[in-house]
Image (cartoon, rainbow, N blue to C red; front, side, top):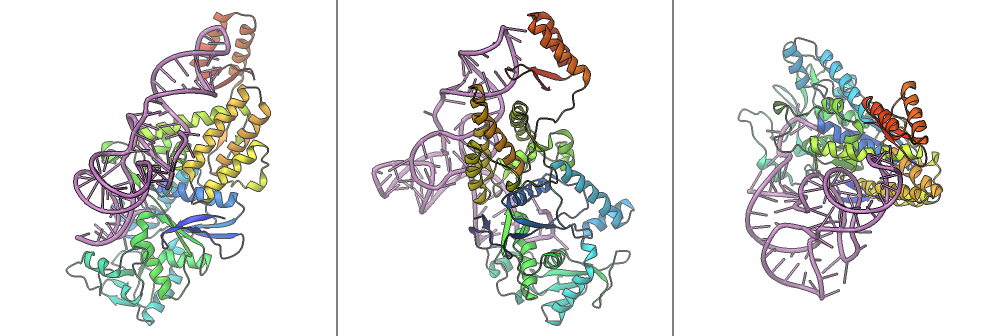
Length: 463
RNA sequence: GGCGGCGUGGCCGAGCGGUUAGGCAGGGGCCUGCAAAGCCCCGUACUCCGGUUCGAAUCCGGACGCCGCCUCCA
């Protein structure tokens, strides 16, 4: 049984599915107005891991994640750079997918774009106006939060305390400071869609509720995002669904924040802050491993030091892959348990790791268990028990692969010259000509290869 | 002010009443022609002060420190 923390209930509980064997999952995607940053990396990795694990366990997961391609920030950037809004959106959407690809985040099943759903949003808003759940003021159409009895449920705060603490604009025409824009009337030169209540563009909260319900239907299973979306974004989505009398997400998942080492990691200080930048200078698997080593609801420290730490840990997995000729690639391909055969010690490993991951995605303990298995496999192999060692190593690779972490011994192409040098060194060693062997080793090192001798043959790896 | 979270060995980061987390870094050893890799062993941590308990990093109370949300930020 899959269990996952539900923000609404405030506890870990069964992740029930509306349709047997099928999971419908919605993750709030990016507003494409700038390069993706490290925080985007964390939440996409977390929910990618979740999706992969659910799939591994045999669920048919429909994973919907939107692209918000119309928004104030996009408009501002377009104005500033004298280009169109759609050009800004297209540019940064490309950057988004580029980064996701490098991170190994599998493509969603559906990637709805807000601008393609405006008509449905307009209809949605018309219903609200008709039911007097929404009202029109000078700059747009607003949702009347007082019309939803349990508003504040996700936030975990009573409506009163929210109302008292919310900042109130002096000239605000809103009935309550908590009321939010469903629709913003277009100012001159701004992009606009027609609507009976006035041309304009949709508000962010309306986009996600319309697209998630539109694609996944009423009462879909799981709605996810970063913790900062809990309130007000998710609260507002929920409020609209309630007001529209649609059953909404049955389970809410929120991933924790990123600690940015206080002020250290900022653009102004020249440290990487964009995901694009990080991925350009490190092994993309390092960020995934870093994310996997902490719990998805805990805050994590992402810094050059912790990334470098993860990169070094990765070499341990790559060494295992070389030793046992393991090849588990990932990318868009999702691994299913049914497609792999676990044997002997591998069966036990898969069972314990599975139990951990089924319980609110305990990736840190699962990873610790897998690293134990790595030691175990090496240890067995050192003792000559290659059969058991292989079972363990192969299972570990499959399970890492299930989490989207590629363990691949064929990561580097070797050219003929290098192959010849390795052969020459082997010959020199066989002849006891150590100085010649060492000389060739130096030559290989100069070309970026480290030589490792073993009873199972000579191997080389990238320095 | 309201709500919530956190303080663990050199670093990252699990644990959530009693047993080795794990990784990285460091030290010692084995293996190796020498290396590399691997294996074995080691540091013996839990912000502080009380309390509950046979027993607490884990539960309760308090103090101090840090952080998040309450603003269309993942």
